[in-house]
Length: 441
Image 1 (tube, rainbow, N blue to C red):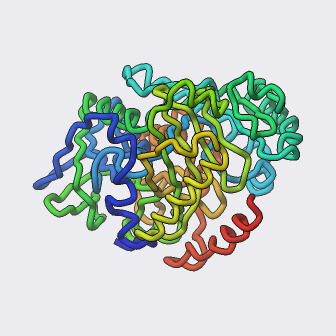
Image 2: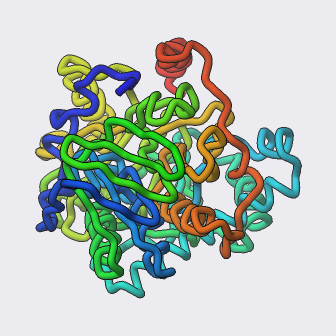
Image 3: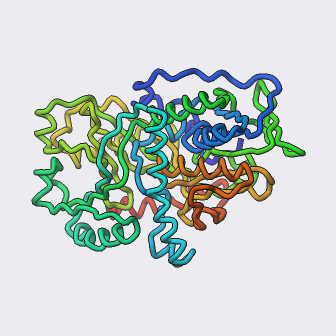
């Protein structure tokens, strides 16, 4: 495999202390063995791959999912659990400039559809995902930031057809929010969940529909003749159609089309022990809203149903034991600064994972044009719970050579351009990260 991080990033160490696996009794998925056939082979057992598998199987397709580790091992099982608007990191101006205003609005209206699709799957398959939070709240870290929330609220109402709630600084405390912020804006779309319970729920539903899921089956080679032949250590799988759903954990040569079209970067999360009512009151944070701040390197955080606090941040273009230790130190420092009353509260769970950025900061769902019959979806820019689920549903239709039943926005049909510097493309972001950290943005 040709991956752009050292092997450490793709091993067990970055997720060793992840909280989510401790909350489930996951069903083991045996490796693929022997000579197998399928209508569709899917590489990757995360939100994208399992959503695609479930939708395909419900249409009667014979599907096999091949996962290098096991269900939810990658970003789908170690993210912050925000099922919310998002998928693109591009501004409205950038989207309108590059694709046109109609395409921008079409994409914005797709975001709540993605949330609704995930919500419907959870309800239909009775997934117990520890759901909480009524929408999502952005916190202003400066007075200037809050001053811009009026315009932000107008944009939200225009694009999503909902009315957000503005909370000024002097009303934060009565809403269970720490007074260190300068105001809040809540959009009533989305919710929080346990992402490992959700991805395992997708796997359970897919198996019930007839999908075969093979864990510990990393694909070593892809060949294309009249059909696709995928080789693993113990199996050869032939399939009429192929879906690559590996996102930030992709390899530049599986297939070669992937080379340079995604940029993995790291997100880091900590989870505290359960806190008492007195500890919550001491900090003045009792809301269970899914929150984030408005910085460039945003923080995202939420109080979970069992009174554990989850806190995440973007940080890191290096992966090694020393880099993990530095990220652990940084995230704890940021947590203590934001929530000083909890400085002595133990956070036994800290972990890291890879998300994917596209050069134009928009997600892609569509064909791999060098391999007829192969499709992929990638780059959700840290908001993949809903959008990856939605992308999987689109892929299921595309793999059956039919027009998607859900909205298929033009922005998501535009193939990602290659990042500069090839396998060294992480270096493109080093000066950006350094400048933003220096300014505290």
